[in-house]
Amino acid sequence: MARVFKTGRYPAIIVLGIVIAVLFVNVHSIDQAKARASMLLLAPTADELAAAMLRIGLGPAQLTAAGGSPSTVATVVGDSLDDMIANPAAIELADAACADLKRQCDGLKRVIQSGQATSEQINAYAVAMTQLSLAEAQRQSVLNGLLTSATASLNASQQNTLAAIRGNRNWDLPIEFLTVDRTEPQWVQLRDALANERISAKLGQQPDPEAQALLLQLRGNPLVATAKANLDANLAVVTAAWEQAIGVDG
Image (tube, rainbow, N blue to C red; front, side, top):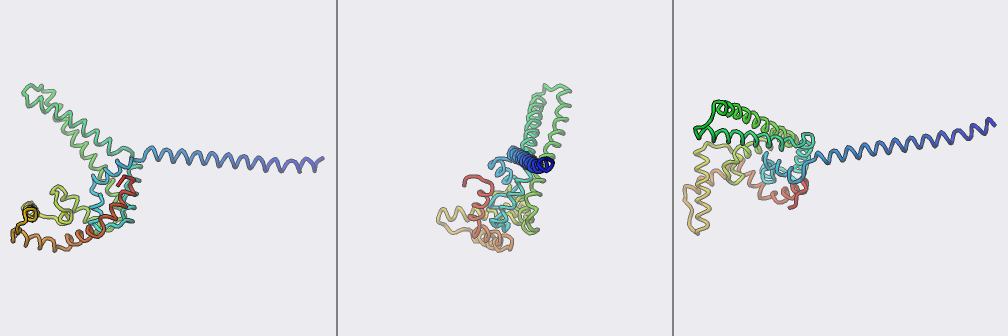
């Protein structure tokens, strides 16, 4: 009987072990599924990711001008996504805080300008302006953090080129020219020379010789020439890779 008892006991232990193992695997799988679901909830939409990258100067054209390749773009987009998942809705919350304080400041400013403000409203305006400055600084810190994460895989030359383009983008000129810092008079001179070239071509006239000489000189700058060559050769493939990595429709 003892032998019968032992031979019946081990299969039961084995079965119990299998059951426990199955339960463990199921629980582990459920945990993994929950983790994946949680990550999906935190992940930005494709449009949000694209908007954030454009906002910090990491669109396809900028990345191409800086020498980015399709594989480079995939890494940059992936690192951007990781940062936005790690800091869910950080940009949206910062924007909302700035917008709310801006409305408060504008409302108080109108009352003050009307000459009907109380001393409390005047004091409140000063406080609100201080809070708005702090909120804007915090928002910039969030954007800077995203930029640092997104460009961590790029080399120093690429980062420097992107920084120059980002710093000069308010001039709204062809991107290759934004790779070089200039004084305000030099920017105005470049803008006028480009306008002369564009309008002359449209009217079928000869452009101003001095303007053309300036453009020839500026286009010969190594940084400008390299960025232009990168854009001419690779913009289409980098744009396609950028859109694919983000998940937006081309």
